[in-house]
Structures are given as structure tokens and as C-alpha cells.
Picture 1 (cartoon, rainbow, N blue to C red):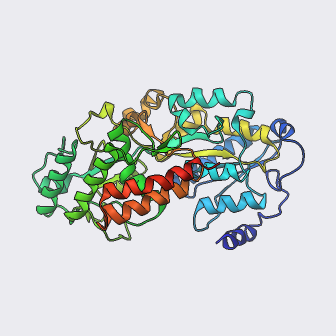
Picture 2: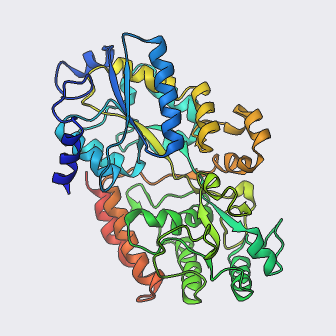
Picture 3: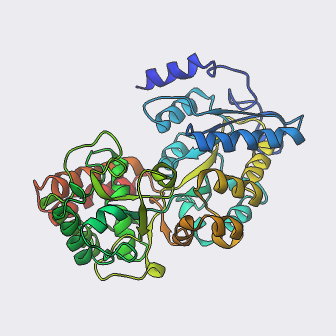
Length: 429
């Protein structure tokens, strides 16, 4: 796959280019931090983000003729993580990538591919003033920031009002707060023919799929704990096992499907609920009459007490960048209050900005559906920024799939069994 990804980069004319950000070398990191000149940025390929990025680049370039930004979508490959990793190895990563997964930061850092943003005099203060207390989740184990927290899609439960109404369930305040309420509602909506399944998270085994079944509920049940903390697993706790037992019940009673669905099960009416973030609102518009509530907890915490998974994507500055002085200025420009507002307006995704709902009152007045996601954004949990992050998540997913989804092992025993390997991985440098 590495060869495939590299060939993609070559085909795009990126490998070996003399672009300002590519090629590596050319002076000390201190000199690069001061250097000004052209830079290259990559961004996501979804239509809304592409539109935002193009206007951001055009706006910058209109005022900085001597420090031109060249933007493009992240080259295609099996995954953006593989493409970025290959670019780091080849020494031709761009200066900035506006879609860096927090789960990949430890690997990119280990490759020597990322610049510590603390190396800029105002780096640490800018990040912490913009994002507030959630910023600390994005520090690496050496205490430095190798990513700027950019945007979040706090995961909540979407429900289909028509499916619920068919089952005689209150569509304004559906009983979904506790595990018992959620299961009872699920049984009722399926029995009434509201949908074949109550909820349909992907049952496949990719490492990131646990971010959309286990992890949001674990964050909620624990009041904001991560999968791993201080090098030790947290998921095999009493709270983690409650979450596993809840999902096991959904699968064992056929309220959730063990079969992979090629499409959007919520839009297609196959499931009465979905567990996703506000990026999906645009997808559901005109197709599903939906409502949204926080993810459930065993005791039914209030919305103001409920945490969830952030589903964040951040911005990394890559060490092949020569003109890091300009790159840092572009990064601050792109995450300014004005540009964050344009990003919110264009995508519906939440800038990881402290007090986002009060920062853009007009937007949320005009778009009340998004207000609850802005409120939820203040109580989000990120993936742990630890060594071997992706391998840790894959280890967890393997145990989850075997036990919770397919019932081949007791879920509690499966979580206990994954602890030793995860702790070993987290303890490596």
C-alpha cells in the first residue's frame, strides 16, 4: 500500500518538487520558524470544506502577494493517514494539513514529521486561548502541541421522528436517557415497524469504528475519561463493562445489525436512530425528519452533565515546511474568529473554539438545530494522544467485535483480556 500511495503522490507531481514546503532540509528549524514565503496546504475533499478552504486561501493571497498559499485536496489513497505518512517519509508533505486525525499524531510525531507549535513564541498561548480547557487533551506526552485543535463533530443520538411516532413514542422528548429507556424505546420502535433496526453503527472491524459505538457512551458514563490515561487502560472499568453490556443487548436482541450496510441506514429508513455528529445534518436535510439527544448513560445524566466523543480533526504543521513563519501566520488566519465563523456557516461543524455558541449568536439564532451541538462541544473527549494509538484502537476493536457484536466471548472478559496488550503499547516510546 505504501508503494501505491507513493505512486499517487508521484502522479500528482508532488514527489521531488521544489515547492516551498516540500523537499525538507535547507537550514535549521529555528531559521525555518522565522522564514516567510510561499507555502502549500492540504484540506479535506468534502464539498463544504473545499469551498471554505478555497475562500480562505483566496482571502489570504489577496493580501499577501509575497507569501502565496497553494491549496489542494488531500491526495486520494486508502486513507488520508496513509497518504500523509507516505508524504512524511518522502519529505514532501505540505506545510499545513487541515484534516489531521488526532489518532495519527503520535505516529506522525514519531516519524519526525510534525513541528511542535510551541516553538512559536505565541504558539501555546494561541492554542489555549482559542480552545480553552479542551486544548489540554491535544498535548503530546512530552507536553507539547503538535496539532492545533480545529473542529469537532460531537457525537449525539439522532432519531427519526416519523419512525418514533409510528410506535407511539413522544417525538419531542423521547425516552432515551437511560440504558433501560433506550432499550425499551428500541424494542417498541422495531416491534411497531418503525424501522428494521433501532440503531445501526457500522459493525465492521476498522480501528476507528469504536468511536461511534463504545467511545461516546464510555465518555458519557465516566464523566469524560479517555480510553487510556497515564499509560493505563480505562475501558475495562465497571463503567466500560456497563457500556459493553448495553451494546451486547442491542445486538443479541437484533435491535442493531451485525451485517455491514453499504449506504446510510438512517437516511434509507433501515434504522430508527444514528450515532453521529452535526456533519450529518446536511446529509439528512429533506430526507429525514430528525431530532437529536445526548448519548445515554446507565443512570440518565442530564444533557449538561453528559460528555461524548469529539470526532475532531485538527491542523498539523509538517516538518518539511521551509517557510514556517508564513505557515504559522496562515494557521492563525485560518482559525481566526472570522474564518471559524465562515467555516461554521459553510459546514455546520463546530470550530474547537471556547464558547463557540456565544461567539456566533446570529448563526445559532438562524440555525437552532445546531445549538445543541455547540453546547455539547464544551463536553467532549478526544482519543488519547499516546504512542501506538491506532494499534491500541485496533486491539480494542478486535476484542469488541468478537464479544459485543458477535457474542463469541463474554464482553467483560474480552475487555479484561485486551488490557495487558493495550498497556504495553501505551507504555512504549
